[in-house]
Image 1 (cartoon, rainbow, N blue to C red):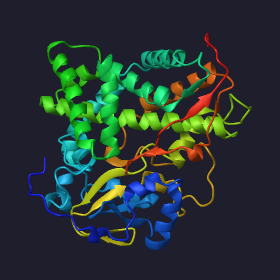
Image 2: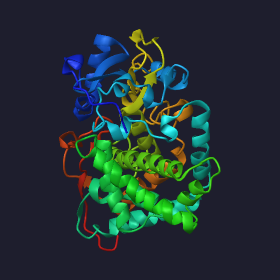
Image 3: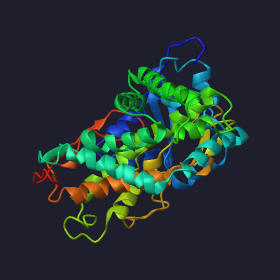
Length: 411
């Protein structure tokens, strides 16, 4: 993908800077955000990996400026100076999440609007009632697999599988392909040594489904994308599938898991468990505000020398969207805001804001509600502060969520 000869990165360029992955791996990233704000303000220098610097945008207003000014901050990674120069090599683990792709994520202006239209059309065409029934069936089937056991891991046995199976069905994927997709996505978002291989596997699976729909149409999102006139090539169809599935799977899994953790540990939200005063929708919104599924989102690239949050930004520098950090920006949210507030940037904003908020919420709400209804007496067996996270600069993916409940074969 990067044809520029590989150069040796200079770790000295990032000496003393926090790695983005160190922030996501911390017990409470907001501690790091506060420290960065004290030292730098709402736009702070960080390292993506040794020798690769970036700006982390943590301010609510600064982030809105970043995402709304396409003429200043581009989404196209070909404007990234360290990528163009070869400082970031072609085999970098950052590649799958940050290198240029010919899809809606990497486009600006009119090209972005052309590629966004098929996604908006496909989402608008989803039968939400049918989707809710399908998601509920998926949830019930998964719970049937462990209800009699009296214990489960609500991440690996449930939260990971619900959006995967729901999305796979919407795109015409079935059986083993869905599970292979899950493993590939885990590697891609991890930005570790296997991220490039995970990305290749992910695209190979989707390419097979796309090619099937070229010859045999179906009532699914793959067909909707393949037949949309705005998508001009098979690769544009493939990349549109990549965007919709990758974004939907990882983030919805995290949203489900974190909301379940809230419902099981915070009496304010446990309306169906211990008489709490707030319910599932409040917990879903609190997670989006306090610990959004996408902790840090790549990226924008400065098209010219400019300024943001009092920091001089040079042309070609990369800026990361600190979506989680904006939830505690003291300039916008002094004190402790009420739970359930929807004044957050978890979905990003501007032209690249998430197009699938409604179906994502449907999947997450149905998944949480079904567990609480089917498994009365459910409780966590481990303190959430002791649970580790899958390594990633971008997300805080709970590695597990162990629970116990009265065994109920007929639940």
